Length: 328
Image (cartoon, rainbow, N blue to C red; front, side, top):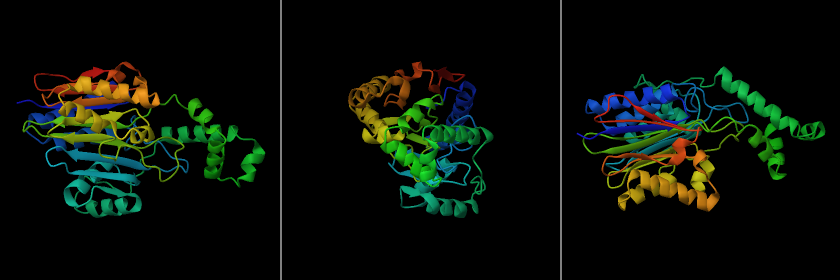
C-alpha cells in the first residue's frame, strides 16, 4: 500500500530524518496520517535546534508564545492553538482541539487552561513547562541590544524604558527594518509535516515559536488552516516552513493554493513551484524564503526549489524506501 511522510524546517539533517523516520514507522504499522504527522512534529518540537516547542524564539517581553495546527484530510476537521505558553508540545493541544471540541482555534490563556485540563487525562500533554533555552535567551539579549543601539540614549529614556514603545517608535520611523536585517542570520524555523496513510487519508500540520522581538500577542501562519498547512483527500496535502507568517497570510494561504492546483491535475512538484512563482510575482518572495512540501493525489511527494537554498531542509520517506531522503 502507498504511504508517505514529509517534513521541513531548518537544515538540520539528523533532526529532520529522525522525525520523518518516527512518522514512517507509524505509517508502516497502519497508523493514521494524523498520528504520523502529530508524532513527527512532536519529535521536532522536542529538538531544541528547531523553532518549535523547546527552543522557541522569545518575543519582545522574553516570553515563549507558540502556535500549531493540524488537519484531517478525510473529514476536513482541523485544530489550532495560538500564542500559548507553558506547554511542551503545542501540536498535541492542537490535535485535541480538533478531536475533542467543536472548535477549530483556541488562543492564549484559554488554550493554556484547556491544556491543563487535558493534562489530567493525557500524561503525554506536559504543562507548566519552560520551553526557553540558554541559546534563545542569549539571542533575545542580542536582539534587545541591537534595538537599543539603534536609538540614542535620550530616545530610550523618553520611552520610560518601555521596549514595546521603543519598538513601535523605530517601526514608525522605518528603523526597525535595519535591526531585523542585522539579525537575519537565523533562519525562520517553523516546522511542518504532511502524510498519506495506507487508507488513502491525508493529514498536514505545522508548529512554530514565532520570531525574536515579535510583539506579545502576535500570531503567525502556522495555526491557520490553509496557511501553515492544509489537507483534503480530494486535493492532497501541503505545508510550509521558512516564510514569515505575515507574508503567507497576506497571500491568502499558500498551502491551500498548492492543494487547489493538485486537485486540478498538477503534480506536487508542479503545484509547489507554481505557488512559489505566484508568491514571487506578488510580493517578491524568493525561493530561499519559503519551503513548500506536498503529497499529490498519486501519492507522490514534491517540493519547490526552496530545498536548494541553505535556509531550509526537507526530508521524506515513503513505501519502497529504506532510509529517509534529505534535501537542502
